[in-house]
Amino acid sequence: MVLQLITPPVKEPVTTAMLCDFLRLSPDQEEDLLERLIRTAREVIEQHCNLVMLPQRWLLQLANWPQSGRIALYKAPVISIDKVQGFDADGTAVLFNADDWRLDTDSRPQRLYLRRPQHITISRGLEIELTAGLANEPEDLPETLRHACLVLAAHLYDNRNSYETVMHNLPDMVAQLVSPWLRRGRL
Image 1 (cartoon, rainbow, N blue to C red):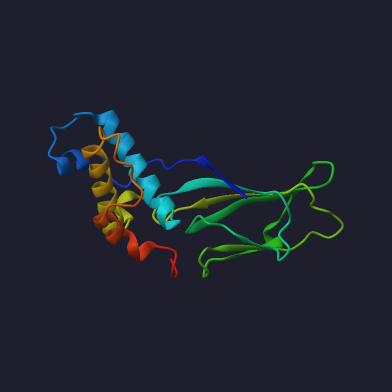
Image 2 (tube, rainbow, N blue to C red):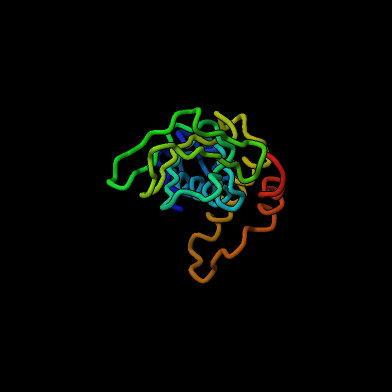
């Protein structure tokens, strides 16, 4: 299984102005660095929680047909399944209709259940394009997630020159803020 980002989010959970204010920096100071730190903080939190904060498109590639027909999506919450296709023995793409699959949004991770197509052998894998995101706009995200991004970006900023310090775990404050969003339970 391979997950590949097709389209990143258009916006980040927090702005560079918010991070400048949080760090007590003058406006527009080190703006490029702050943008990278915010993006990195979001990516780390999303990866830690298996959560997608703002709309993103992903491509999930599977080498084989799943025996159960059930596929864990690992990017949540899923907004839409944009395309499902398999590849037959000669590499020809076989598109699935919406009637050929069902999205289970109640499970965590969310799952896609596929019906095996009749008269066609899917032997060269599957590709699923999906859009996932918890909120459409940064302001609609839970404040705890936005604050976690600020705290983690500030931590990265404060430790940007410390080559000996490797982040093996999230800082305690960030871990506490994101703990409700970990894999357990529903989204």
